[in-house]
Amino acid sequence: MTDRRTRREPTPHLQTRPATMLTAIGLCALIVLMQLVPEVQSMVRLPASAVTTAR
Figure 1: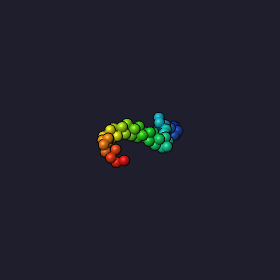
Figure 2: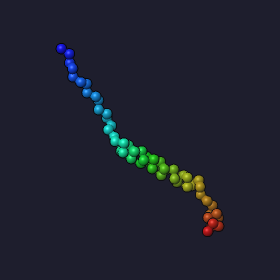
Figure 3: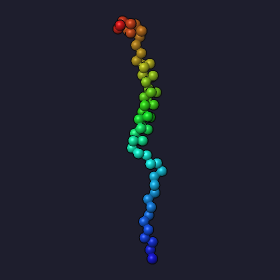
Figure 4: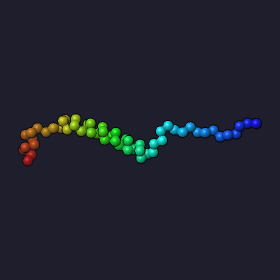
């Protein structure tokens, strides 16, 4: 007599929903952007004379 039981599928270790994954990706992108902003501002600094003549 053969065993006719169905095989159980393995459950994944991480069961993340798409909204949770997108939130995590968005937070990572925000952190990277916050790290890059001070570097971009220091590269784009205007001289003080250009700022005063524009007023």
